[in-house]
Image 1 (cartoon, rainbow, N blue to C red):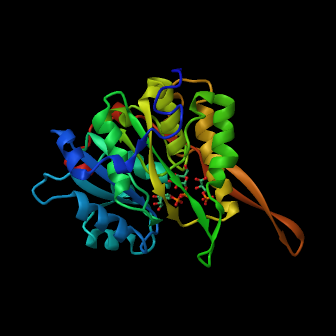
Image 2: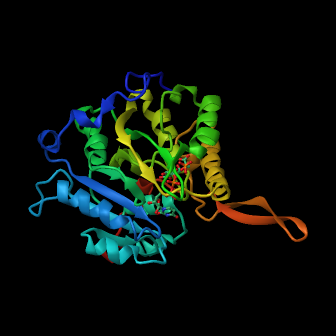
Image 3: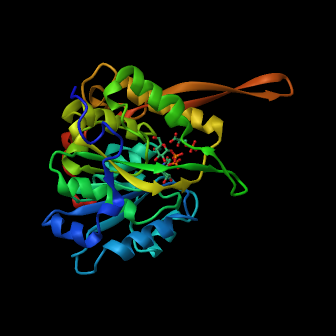
Length: 325
Ligand SMILES: O=c1ccn([C@@H]2O[C@H](COP(=O)(O)OP(=O)(O)O[C@H]3O[C@H](CO)[C@@H](O)[C@H](O)[C@H]3O)[C@@H](O)[C@H]2O)c(=O)[nH]1
Ligand SMILES: O=C(O)[C@H](O)COP(=O)(O)O
């Protein structure tokens, strides 16, 4: 396990405002960049995410900072796919990518499948439910990868206020971060204590590194990529960038319980070290989470099967044929 490096020791070392798209374009050279947006029922926000990124970074002749913007539609039942396509994204349904590999629900599954329909040397992930954000998220996340060969993974850092249903700003968000991820890191990877937002949904990674990791199918994908990068490359392989402020849609506490199970499951697989959750090839695995609500007969259990499986490293699979995409 590597020691603390200069990028993470004192919190974010990079600021998005330190770079312009033009400056980064000069650094980009012949490398290519994919922006991937996983989306499940995000018809109200996905278009703005796609449109703004395309407007600022994609050029018709392929000379822009971003080469492709790809939305992975993750079992949406609303108009997410149509809206994203109309906004200019390439849209793939997660369950139609590599159908030979089967399909399970989940954010991690969407990101894992994205590797089979994108080609960028650098991959930037941006959530589709963003409300308060800017396209500097993309430049900020790319900058460390374009300027420091040691960096493999870039994590976003931001203020993340909780906005209630009336639009009022409540306390600081990040409930799973504070109650699950950060305590686990304190116990089992204290070298990552300098990571401000371990679960941030906006991150960038070198394709080669991502393809070498097992990927949890659910919300464990972020903690897994963080721990795997640390275990393989040490702290110098991870950079953080301050992106300012981010707001998004919030889940209820009980739904976050399911997310917490997935984060813990992914983290625990990596507890003893060894990159990639012991190889990860059990996409359909679940554990039962029992929660309670008071009903007419007292407290009634509600049991949910939570997906805790993982996909194997993409580079362990044969490349897709054009027909399989
Ligand atoms: O099955 C799913 C569930 C979610 N999403 C998309 O993934 C993104 C993030 O999902 P969300 O439910 O909004 O997660 P958050 O409550 O915002 O959770 C935070 O913490 C998670 C756990 O680390 C991260 O995965 C998230 O990106 C991060 O924003 C959104 O674009 C969703 O549409 C999918 O594509 N498929
Ligand atoms: O990142 C997290 O901890 C979860 O997404 C919960 O975030 P929230 O408390 O801001 O909704």
